[in-house]
Image (cartoon, rainbow, N blue to C red; front, side, top):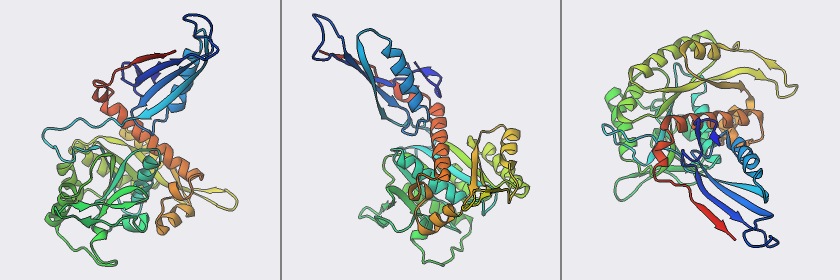
Amino acid sequence: MQDPALKIDLASAGMVVSVAVEASPAGGGAGAVAGAVAIIGIELTTPACPSKDLIAKSIEEAVGRLPGLQRVEVRFTSRVLGRPNHPSNPRLPGVKNIIAVAAGKGGVGKSTVSTNLAAALSKLGASVGILDADVYGPSIPQMMGPPERAAIVDTGNKIIPALHHGLRVVSIGFFVERGGAVIWRGPMVHKLLQQFIEDVAWGELDYLIVDLPPGTGDAQLSLSQLLPITGAVMVTTPQEVSIIDVEKALAMWTRVEVPVLGLVENMSGFVCPSCGHHEEIFLRGGGRKLAERAGIKFLGEIPLEPAVSRAGDDGTPVVLRDPGSKVAEIFSRLAADIACQLSVKNGPAAGAAKRSAKLTLIR
């Protein structure tokens, strides 16, 4: 049986962690397992695995053909594969994947994508943090609402991240007055970002989402130097004026050797909440065309919906506030796609060496 994303069989990937056969009490004579139940334990490389149902169905069909089995039960656990430790940049060793969410220009909904991506990954069972690197315009505190636990400095002078909806969050917005402006030159921005990386007790995380400011300036360059970024997600709106700036940002990521995981087209048409009519306010398809032209993955289109902006203003990402909505499902699929890409990128060998399949027969 193969993992559809990893393109490798489950056993070689170290994903088969247990096989148990429980014979029913009404079984036959010696050695008979008539009516037995096969219980297969599979450890996924991410709780956001989009192929989970397909893997279960394939195992049930294949194993179910064996004689004497009443049924097959697949039990899933997960352990996220982490990026290989880079000897030249050992920062944040407890963080398995660092995802930069970036945009060529402002106002395209980058922070909305960041918060909903983080919330979707967390909802699927991953441990997630958000680093708000937009020093001049921090939106994350407003979009995440009041914290369950405020950010504090402990006795060891370490910053303990705030806790919002179960997510660990750090932002300059926590440390300045509402409406106060941060008027700093580039070196001060670099120093702050370094502090947010080195002096914050992030702990163990499966994914750290870094919400970047727009453009290709000091913050982007500082973070590419300070952090071993696993991959970047680009956000754009459909019109050409946004696409032009995204192309410049893509060139920057190439220069700093950070792989781009894909492109999201936000505000891809307006869906009327009353009648469902789709109006292409900012045209449509510019993001897909750019992705094809640049040779990167097109992650999907997010429509312009009032519910998304209301959720952000109220401090609860739409993925959590209205999980059954169409736009929440889009964000969830986007999160699963990115998590799957990272599993493939990090490779099954990263976590498979210490995992071995074991066979247990319970009679």
